[in-house]
Image (cartoon, rainbow, N blue to C red; front, side, top):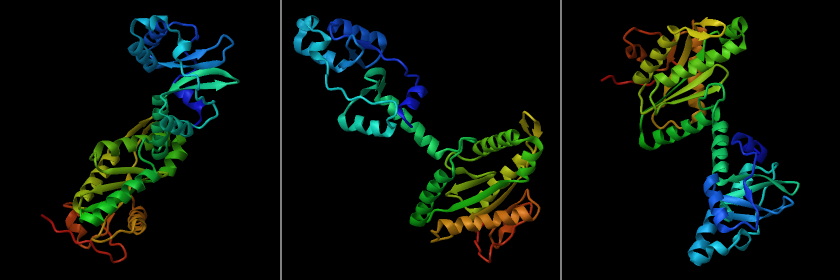
Length: 321
């Protein structure tokens, strides 16, 4: 992100300034009325002469007392002003602000100041950049990169402390038909509402992410297979029974899920995801709208005898009760 983009995002397209001949009283009043922490000092030709801040005013008053009124901005302003341009990178400028302990910086083009930005503007922009880097813009969920970082942390916690951990991959059934029949705009609405349902149904410490297309990942920290499978089944039932209202009409979809529990001492993220993906594939190819888990005694997990399938002979034994 460059400075021009930052200025547009925070509506900074002007600069409040004062002349070098203004008195300290006038300057203090302008700072108060403008509700800002610093003013640019501008010569009559529009060039930057310096900068004066609230700190300069307070320090001068503390030093001079009643003689404060006799001083002008030119007597106390900072003359060596660091500036930036609209093409500069936000992160580069923020690094300078921190390193130089600067709280305000003017934006200068062709020798003339066009805006004044505060360190808060830059810190807000950095938070937005971080949010964009880790958030799927369509659903508002963590994106693939963010989800995998969360998964890696939870996997490390599982490996270190032996806490249970389960993970599922979920895929909206026949999503291509939704796009073909109703249009991609309606498909986007379905994805957004599906993400909303996931967020609403899951616990705050569970992990949810959109990892591609119509595929989502569900992470269940401190959760055994039985509890995670009940959560997945609840999601399936909610999705199948909730028509999604779009501008193209109501659309009802279903979801297929592959669920696995991380075994004791298992720390290979790729292999765990591959296993969940194989289970998802099994769910998709055996009728959809179903859940596949890789436990030898998985039938005991569901009271309704939901269909399950083993994954390459791997077994997770779940002790009920």
